[in-house]
Amino acid sequence: MRTSIATVSLSGSLTEKLTAASRAGFDGVEIFENDLLTGPLAPEEIRARCADLGLSVDLYQPMRDIEAVPEAEFARNLRRARHKFELMTRLGADTVLVCSSVSPLAEDDDDLAAEQLSRLAGLAREFGVRVAYEALAWGRHVSTYDHAWRIVEAAGHPALGTCLDSFHILSRGCDPQGIEDIPGEKIFFLQLADAPRIAMDVLQWSRHHRCFPGQGGFDVAGLVRHVLRTGYDGPLSLEVFNDVFRQAEAGPTAVDAHRSLLLLQEAVGAVELPAPVVPTGVAFAELVTPDAEPVTAVLDALGFNRAARHRGKPVDLWQRGEARILVNTGPAARRDGARLAAIGLESPDPAGAARRAEVLLAPVLPRRRAPEDTPLDAVAAPDGTELFFCATGRPELPDWRADFPDVTGQEPAANTTGKAIEETARDATRIDHLSLTQPWHQFDEAALFHRAVLGLRPQESVDVADPYGLLRSRAVSDDDGRVRIALTVGAAPTDDTAHAQHIALATDDVVTAARRFLAAGGLLLPVPVNYYDDLAARYEFAEGEWETYRELGILYDRDAGGAFRHCYTRTIGRVFFELVQRDPGYRGYGAPNAPVRLAAQHAGRPPR
Ligand SMILES: O=C(O)c1ccc(O)c(O)c1
Ligand SMILES: [Mg+2]
Image 1 (spheres, rainbow, N blue to C red):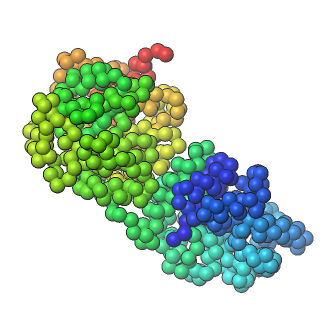
Image 2: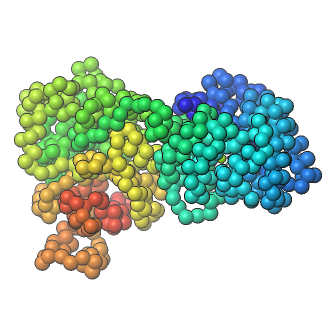
Image 3: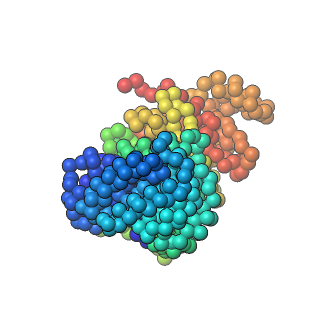
């Protein structure tokens, strides 16, 4: 299907918006009047620009407060309309959106509304323009799509149809089933937006919190299925008023937007994409650091061994049990310290996973960085994290381990790699989860990306109090908990405590692991005694258990499925490690303890 986006959904000048829409793969745009009025380009120039960019001008909008008004007022409205229709001819736009009136002059009179809209459509037709009448959820007398359609039907004018907008329909809880009663050729336009389910005034909700389909709580795909059953064959057009997108760079927003429409089309069966390939484990996490020592000192104290070194690059493989961490001191290292730059995901079908990611607009990374490298499928996530699709120890496929001869000098032949990993697997350590901080404007995109591209399931988003702001966190995971990624975003873009990433290592016995780490010279994040006093009031512990947690700085949480015990190392650059002991049924990530952890991290930060 054709895809379109309203210019109001993107930031910047009209030229920037059009360029971003075209680059992201949209076929057309809705031009918002404001974007035309405030810019230097004449309508003919905008038309030419769109044509050059391969964009059609699918809609011009909005016209407001037109219908069901006293005759003298309506005469003025027609004068205004004539001017707009002339402008639309110059712009090359053949459909105008008229939203239901919010004017105090409007009367609650459907016959009058129909009669005046019919006259408006008559004038529009002289200019080759069609009028699409949309019910605003807060319209004065017309606020539902079925009411708008009754008026359009009564008017019976060929140049008058309706515009459906998923936000106005779903925000009011209207049943979209009734859409199927509208003939497809009378649906002149379809606008799509999702929104988080928040209780607030519908106008404010619409103007500030719309998001792209799949990023909120509405069943937008369900609505589109009803629309397609009518035979509607116009574009799927995104109209998203959103405070974040108004500020964020237009290019990435447009990509996020187009990805959401691809997924929507997949969901309704309008397009077939390569099937999702859900990862089955974490092969490795890669830290890039200007200075290996502080990282390797912590890994060493955590019981990791330097197992292998990359043949051609300054990258070491550190391993403990099934947890594998690459420490890269190569040219990608930045002065601001260690960061989590890449994740290896075990994939049942690495090439298939990369194909889906590419179709869903993820940048594909070179399969080889150097001629002698093993070719690996990899893409970049929206935050820049490189995702490698791995087939560790599967002789029929390229194996990332092949580039890492053991430190003993022995080349791991593809078919012995599996065995090497099996031997160390007796030690129960593995990566429980990875926490990735997202750019402030890409949080919703990140959740949709990980769901759509990797087939991971997002959990509810949680808000966490940080002493200097509010942090949002949303985990995505596979159904078996073999791959868990916590996506977080801090309020203050400059605050590096809230922006540190971490690697959580699963252990069967966090007390022993913490003691070993301390004995090996490691430092754990100190936790205030107040926390433990409160913990003792909240839960009952076995004899001595609580005292041990307090002594070591171990945090504790519990849900219906079991307990979670965890502690943290000090932060190195932009990363830290967490040791976690997770009961099999526990689903969370210790979120109730996150404010304690953040406060301690702030307190322990070296003064600037
Ligand atoms: O918020 C508004 O006024 C507005 C304008 C035009 C639309 O298509 C819409 O859905 C909302
Ligand atoms: Mg709309």
